[in-house]
View 1 (cartoon, rainbow, N blue to C red):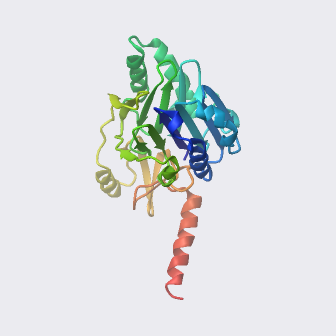
View 2: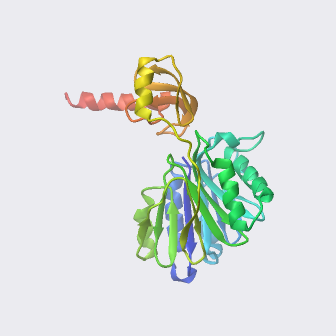
Length: 308
Protein backbone atom coordinates (compact mmCIF):
# COMPACT_ATOMS: atom_id res chain seq x y z
CA UNK A 1 0.00 0.00 0.00
CA UNK A 2 0.99 3.67 0.15
CA UNK A 3 3.75 4.97 2.40
CA UNK A 4 3.78 8.02 4.66
CA UNK A 5 7.10 9.62 5.59
CA UNK A 6 6.50 12.64 7.83
CA UNK A 7 8.95 14.83 9.76
CA UNK A 8 8.17 17.37 12.49
CA UNK A 9 11.04 19.49 13.80
CA UNK A 10 11.59 21.68 16.83
CA UNK A 11 14.92 23.12 15.61
CA UNK A 12 15.47 22.54 11.89
CA UNK A 13 19.01 24.01 11.99
CA UNK A 14 20.23 21.00 13.98
CA UNK A 15 19.56 18.43 11.24
CA UNK A 16 21.97 19.21 8.39
CA UNK A 17 21.40 15.81 6.74
CA UNK A 18 17.60 16.08 6.70
CA UNK A 19 17.26 16.30 2.92
CA UNK A 20 19.55 13.29 2.44
CA UNK A 21 17.51 11.36 5.03
CA UNK A 22 14.21 12.23 3.37
CA UNK A 23 15.56 11.32 -0.06
CA UNK A 24 16.70 7.96 1.29
CA UNK A 25 13.47 6.98 3.09
CA UNK A 26 11.14 8.20 0.33
CA UNK A 27 13.20 6.39 -2.31
CA UNK A 28 12.95 3.20 -0.26
CA UNK A 29 9.18 3.66 0.02
CA UNK A 30 8.80 4.50 -3.69
CA UNK A 31 10.23 1.13 -4.78
CA UNK A 32 6.93 -0.63 -4.04
CA UNK A 33 4.68 2.48 -4.16
CA UNK A 34 5.47 4.11 -7.49
CA UNK A 35 2.09 5.39 -8.73
CA UNK A 36 2.97 8.85 -7.48
CA UNK A 37 5.26 10.85 -5.19
CA UNK A 38 4.34 13.99 -3.28
CA UNK A 39 5.72 16.37 -0.66
CA UNK A 40 4.46 19.32 1.38
CA UNK A 41 7.21 21.61 2.67
CA UNK A 42 7.71 25.35 3.13
CA UNK A 43 3.95 25.80 2.78
CA UNK A 44 3.74 24.39 -0.77
CA UNK A 45 3.14 21.05 -2.48
CA UNK A 46 5.02 19.23 -5.24
CA UNK A 47 3.48 16.09 -6.81
CA UNK A 48 4.42 13.93 -9.79
CA UNK A 49 4.32 10.37 -11.12
CA UNK A 50 8.10 9.93 -11.03
CA UNK A 51 10.22 9.97 -7.88
CA UNK A 52 10.78 13.58 -6.78
CA UNK A 53 14.41 14.70 -6.51
CA UNK A 54 14.28 16.15 -2.99
CA UNK A 55 17.74 17.66 -3.35
CA UNK A 56 16.16 20.14 -5.79
CA UNK A 57 13.89 21.19 -2.89
CA UNK A 58 16.71 21.43 -0.33
CA UNK A 59 16.09 25.14 0.42
CA UNK A 60 12.37 24.55 0.98
CA UNK A 61 13.04 21.53 3.21
CA UNK A 62 15.51 23.51 5.33
CA UNK A 63 12.87 26.23 5.88
CA UNK A 64 10.24 23.72 7.08
CA UNK A 65 9.26 22.55 10.54
CA UNK A 66 6.56 20.21 9.18
CA UNK A 67 7.12 18.00 6.14
CA UNK A 68 4.56 15.56 4.73
CA UNK A 69 5.59 13.08 2.02
CA UNK A 70 3.53 10.35 0.36
CA UNK A 71 4.53 7.51 -1.96
CA UNK A 72 1.41 6.16 -3.63
CA UNK A 73 0.05 2.80 -4.76
CA UNK A 74 -3.24 3.72 -6.40
CA UNK A 75 -6.44 1.79 -5.67
CA UNK A 76 -8.84 4.48 -7.00
CA UNK A 77 -8.46 7.78 -8.86
CA UNK A 78 -5.56 6.41 -10.88
CA UNK A 79 -4.33 9.60 -12.57
CA UNK A 80 -1.42 11.65 -11.23
CA UNK A 81 -3.93 14.38 -10.31
CA UNK A 82 -5.08 12.38 -7.28
CA UNK A 83 -1.65 11.84 -5.75
CA UNK A 84 -1.21 13.04 -2.16
CA UNK A 85 -0.87 15.33 -0.25
CA UNK A 86 -4.19 17.16 -0.65
CA UNK A 87 -4.28 20.79 0.43
CA UNK A 88 -6.59 23.77 0.88
CA UNK A 89 -6.39 26.96 2.95
CA UNK A 90 -7.11 25.05 6.18
CA UNK A 91 -5.60 21.57 5.92
CA UNK A 92 -3.03 19.22 4.40
CA UNK A 93 -3.92 15.51 4.33
CA UNK A 94 -2.13 12.24 3.49
CA UNK A 95 -3.61 8.74 3.74
CA UNK A 96 -2.48 5.14 3.46
CA UNK A 97 -5.14 2.48 2.93
CA UNK A 98 -8.53 1.98 1.33
CA UNK A 99 -11.67 3.88 2.37
CA UNK A 100 -14.03 3.05 -0.48
CA UNK A 101 -17.04 4.46 1.41
CA UNK A 102 -15.79 7.92 0.43
CA UNK A 103 -15.36 7.43 -3.32
CA UNK A 104 -17.46 10.00 -5.17
CA UNK A 105 -18.18 10.65 -8.83
CA UNK A 106 -14.61 11.87 -9.37
CA UNK A 107 -11.20 11.43 -7.80
CA UNK A 108 -10.08 8.86 -5.27
CA UNK A 109 -11.33 7.54 -1.94
CA UNK A 110 -8.89 9.86 -0.13
CA UNK A 111 -10.07 12.88 -2.12
CA UNK A 112 -13.66 11.97 -1.19
CA UNK A 113 -12.71 11.79 2.49
CA UNK A 114 -10.88 15.14 2.26
CA UNK A 115 -13.95 16.83 0.73
CA UNK A 116 -16.34 15.38 3.35
CA UNK A 117 -13.95 16.19 6.21
CA UNK A 118 -13.78 19.85 5.17
CA UNK A 119 -17.56 20.01 4.83
CA UNK A 120 -18.04 18.52 8.31
CA UNK A 121 -15.46 20.89 9.77
CA UNK A 122 -17.40 23.91 8.48
CA UNK A 123 -20.63 22.53 9.97
CA UNK A 124 -19.26 21.84 13.47
CA UNK A 125 -19.38 24.34 16.36
CA UNK A 126 -16.57 25.10 18.84
CA UNK A 127 -12.83 25.80 18.70
CA UNK A 128 -10.70 24.39 15.87
CA UNK A 129 -9.47 21.36 17.83
CA UNK A 130 -12.98 20.30 18.82
CA UNK A 131 -14.29 20.83 15.28
CA UNK A 132 -11.45 18.73 13.82
CA UNK A 133 -11.95 15.86 16.28
CA UNK A 134 -15.74 15.92 15.85
CA UNK A 135 -15.36 15.87 12.06
CA UNK A 136 -13.03 12.85 12.14
CA UNK A 137 -15.33 10.97 14.50
CA UNK A 138 -18.49 11.77 12.54
CA UNK A 139 -16.92 10.25 9.42
CA UNK A 140 -15.28 7.19 10.99
CA UNK A 141 -17.15 6.23 14.20
CA UNK A 142 -18.40 2.62 13.98
CA UNK A 143 -17.42 2.38 10.31
CA UNK A 144 -16.41 -1.08 9.12
CA UNK A 145 -14.46 -2.40 6.17
CA UNK A 146 -12.11 0.59 6.09
CA UNK A 147 -8.31 0.56 6.07
CA UNK A 148 -6.79 3.87 7.10
CA UNK A 149 -3.70 5.60 8.42
CA UNK A 150 -4.26 9.36 8.12
CA UNK A 151 -2.31 12.49 9.01
CA UNK A 152 -3.89 15.95 8.85
CA UNK A 153 -2.04 19.24 9.32
CA UNK A 154 -4.10 22.19 10.56
CA UNK A 155 -2.38 25.01 8.66
CA UNK A 156 -3.81 27.68 10.97
CA UNK A 157 -2.47 26.27 14.26
CA UNK A 158 0.40 24.13 12.82
CA UNK A 159 -0.86 21.14 14.78
CA UNK A 160 -0.80 17.65 13.25
CA UNK A 161 -3.56 15.09 13.87
CA UNK A 162 -2.88 11.39 13.28
CA UNK A 163 -5.19 8.35 13.54
CA UNK A 164 -5.28 4.76 12.28
CA UNK A 165 -7.30 1.58 12.58
CA UNK A 166 -6.12 -1.96 13.31
CA UNK A 167 -5.42 -2.87 9.68
CA UNK A 168 -2.81 -0.14 9.10
CA UNK A 169 0.89 -0.08 9.94
CA UNK A 170 2.72 2.95 11.38
CA UNK A 171 5.90 3.77 13.32
CA UNK A 172 6.59 6.93 15.37
CA UNK A 173 10.24 7.71 16.22
CA UNK A 174 10.92 10.62 18.60
CA UNK A 175 14.01 12.46 19.79
CA UNK A 176 14.22 15.74 21.72
CA UNK A 177 14.22 17.73 18.49
CA UNK A 178 12.41 15.65 15.86
CA UNK A 179 9.51 13.25 15.28
CA UNK A 180 9.66 10.89 12.31
CA UNK A 181 6.49 9.04 11.22
CA UNK A 182 6.68 6.24 8.65
CA UNK A 183 4.60 3.38 7.29
CA UNK A 184 7.69 1.33 6.46
CA UNK A 185 9.17 -1.02 9.06
CA UNK A 186 12.64 -0.74 7.45
CA UNK A 187 13.07 3.05 7.15
CA UNK A 188 14.20 3.22 10.79
CA UNK A 189 17.49 1.74 9.57
CA UNK A 190 18.19 5.13 7.97
CA UNK A 191 17.66 7.18 11.14
CA UNK A 192 21.41 7.17 11.76
CA UNK A 193 21.68 9.80 9.00
CA UNK A 194 20.06 12.28 11.39
CA UNK A 195 22.72 11.68 14.08
CA UNK A 196 20.27 11.76 16.98
CA UNK A 197 18.90 9.43 19.65
CA UNK A 198 15.41 8.11 18.86
CA UNK A 199 12.87 6.07 20.77
CA UNK A 200 9.82 4.45 19.19
CA UNK A 201 6.46 5.69 20.46
CA UNK A 202 3.62 3.20 20.85
CA UNK A 203 0.65 4.26 18.69
CA UNK A 204 -2.78 2.85 19.60
CA UNK A 205 -5.53 2.00 17.10
CA UNK A 206 -8.64 4.22 16.87
CA UNK A 207 -6.98 7.01 18.92
CA UNK A 208 -6.77 10.55 17.52
CA UNK A 209 -3.35 12.02 18.37
CA UNK A 210 -2.39 15.69 18.27
CA UNK A 211 1.23 16.76 17.82
CA UNK A 212 2.13 20.37 18.66
CA UNK A 213 5.12 22.39 17.44
CA UNK A 214 6.98 21.60 20.69
CA UNK A 215 6.65 17.89 19.71
CA UNK A 216 4.30 17.01 22.58
CA UNK A 217 2.06 14.10 21.53
CA UNK A 218 -1.36 14.03 23.19
CA UNK A 219 -4.57 12.03 22.82
CA UNK A 220 -7.50 14.27 21.88
CA UNK A 221 -10.18 11.79 20.86
CA UNK A 222 -11.11 8.19 20.19
CA UNK A 223 -12.84 6.72 17.16
CA UNK A 224 -15.59 4.31 18.20
CA UNK A 225 -15.23 0.77 16.94
CA UNK A 226 -18.28 -1.35 16.18
CA UNK A 227 -18.39 -4.49 18.29
CA UNK A 228 -18.09 -7.69 16.30
CA UNK A 229 -18.17 -11.39 17.06
CA UNK A 230 -14.97 -13.38 17.47
CA UNK A 231 -13.60 -14.32 14.04
CA UNK A 232 -12.79 -17.91 14.99
CA UNK A 233 -16.39 -18.35 16.15
CA UNK A 234 -17.56 -17.14 12.74
CA UNK A 235 -15.24 -19.59 10.97
CA UNK A 236 -16.62 -22.48 13.02
CA UNK A 237 -20.19 -21.38 12.35
CA UNK A 238 -19.52 -20.95 8.64
CA UNK A 239 -18.14 -24.49 8.46
CA UNK A 240 -21.38 -25.78 9.99
CA UNK A 241 -23.44 -23.78 7.53
CA UNK A 242 -21.28 -22.76 4.49
CA UNK A 243 -24.22 -21.14 2.71
CA UNK A 244 -24.96 -18.81 5.61
CA UNK A 245 -23.93 -15.20 5.90
CA UNK A 246 -21.64 -14.24 8.77
CA UNK A 247 -20.33 -10.80 9.65
CA UNK A 248 -16.70 -10.00 10.43
CA UNK A 249 -15.83 -6.31 10.47
CA UNK A 250 -17.79 -5.28 7.39
CA UNK A 251 -17.10 -8.60 5.65
CA UNK A 252 -20.08 -10.73 4.74
CA UNK A 253 -18.89 -14.32 4.30
CA UNK A 254 -20.64 -15.80 1.28
CA UNK A 255 -19.02 -19.21 0.97
CA UNK A 256 -15.88 -21.21 1.69
CA UNK A 257 -13.74 -22.54 -1.14
CA UNK A 258 -10.81 -24.78 -0.25
CA UNK A 259 -8.48 -22.71 1.97
CA UNK A 260 -10.24 -19.38 1.33
CA UNK A 261 -13.23 -17.48 2.61
CA UNK A 262 -14.99 -15.73 -0.28
CA UNK A 263 -16.36 -12.45 1.06
CA UNK A 264 -18.59 -9.74 -0.37
CA UNK A 265 -16.54 -6.73 0.77
CA UNK A 266 -13.11 -6.66 -0.96
CA UNK A 267 -9.87 -6.15 0.95
CA UNK A 268 -6.37 -5.17 -0.31
CA UNK A 269 -4.18 -8.16 -1.19
CA UNK A 270 -1.39 -8.69 1.36
CA UNK A 271 1.18 -9.03 -1.46
CA UNK A 272 0.19 -6.55 -4.19
CA UNK A 273 -2.54 -4.33 -2.72
CA UNK A 274 -5.10 -5.24 -5.41
CA UNK A 275 -8.65 -5.57 -4.06
CA UNK A 276 -9.76 -9.17 -3.67
CA UNK A 277 -12.66 -11.17 -2.24
CA UNK A 278 -10.38 -14.03 -1.06
CA UNK A 279 -9.44 -14.25 2.64
CA UNK A 280 -7.05 -17.00 3.73
CA UNK A 281 -8.40 -19.31 6.44
CA UNK A 282 -4.82 -19.92 7.62
CA UNK A 283 -3.82 -16.38 8.65
CA UNK A 284 -6.93 -14.37 7.62
CA UNK A 285 -4.91 -12.23 5.19
CA UNK A 286 -6.44 -11.14 1.88
CA UNK A 287 -4.70 -12.83 -1.08
CA UNK A 288 -5.73 -12.24 -4.70
CA UNK A 289 -5.83 -15.10 -7.23
CA UNK A 290 -2.66 -14.00 -9.06
CA UNK A 291 -0.57 -13.74 -5.90
CA UNK A 292 -2.00 -17.00 -4.57
CA UNK A 293 -0.85 -18.73 -7.75
CA UNK A 294 2.64 -17.17 -7.53
CA UNK A 295 3.02 -18.07 -3.85
CA UNK A 296 1.89 -21.64 -4.57
CA UNK A 297 4.54 -21.93 -7.30
CA UNK A 298 7.20 -20.71 -4.86
CA UNK A 299 6.12 -23.20 -2.20
CA UNK A 300 6.16 -26.02 -4.76
CA UNK A 301 9.67 -24.97 -5.76
CA UNK A 302 10.79 -25.07 -2.10
CA UNK A 303 9.21 -28.52 -1.67
CA UNK A 304 10.98 -29.85 -4.77
CA UNK A 305 14.31 -28.51 -3.51
CA UNK A 306 13.96 -30.75 -0.45
CA UNK A 307 14.24 -33.80 -2.70
CA UNK A 308 17.16 -32.64 -4.84
